[in-house]
Image (cartoon, rainbow, N blue to C red):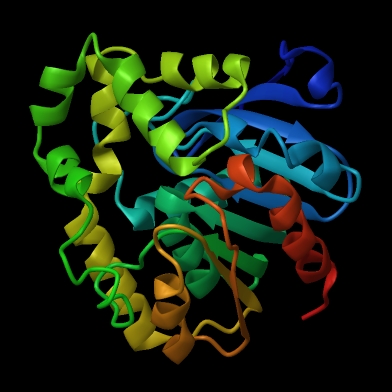
Length: 293
């Protein structure tokens, strides 16, 4: 492991958060960490970085050791050419926890971070003590038919075509990434410094191409998810949280395979739950994370 602690330069909002570079599974990860106690691993999605947890990380750190990496290809983490399928992203997270000396963690995933969080819990119930997943789908598992009645969201196909999206978006990153941030927090504004930091991390064709990696690996990820549920059940306590637009689709996908599942809907909440309704999210996380298996 290579780990270098660097003070986080985001002002007084996160006085206890440190950034470090950690090499795990052959990739150098940018990792934010704070607090002490049982570990909580936070896995972001698209178009995010670890900073989408900015409104919840301080409060969680009062009781937990919070670890929030930039995923492979995102933010300030390394950008390898391959390895964006859910199984490899799960292996990244497992290796990262090992590198940081963690033997048990609650894992929280949103959007692109949900499939690897799910596979971690399926593969390593000895490592994942609790699972929280939000606003995503799990491959082609049944339960999402209503959500997909008119087809998947338009950007899935756009991002999935190799070389296309980045070729037309360079120079327009602020408009494009800003659209997702606005849509994910309807009627509310993402703090300007936070917004700027996220948008800057997607600047250039290289950053865009790597961020589209999970979409280009959707078929592989779907096969991995199907194989996981055909060989095992989700035995760790799990919670599925929906908002707009996914709603209960993720909960419905999980229900047949989970031994212990809570499902919740946050009304009047956009897709980027930790930015749009952080207080409501914390109200669900606190009792669930504090529970015992």
